[in-house]
Length: 71
Image (tube, rainbow, N blue to C red; front, top):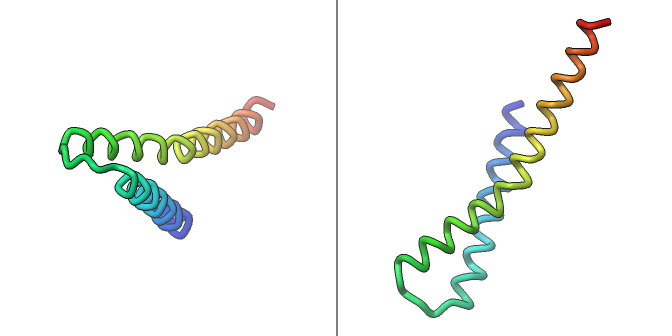
């Protein structure tokens, strides 16, 4: 499980870094508020698929155990 978590963390970090690099290339503003907003939006958009995947895995595991104990 640890390997999966470390891979997911690396994948997440890489996704955030790549997206932020693209934003920096296209943005000329040095305004900290704009940079902070870009950062928050990037992290949120990058983490959504990961959260959805984890939620689906958890629900499937729950269904599996429910089926075991109710039959």
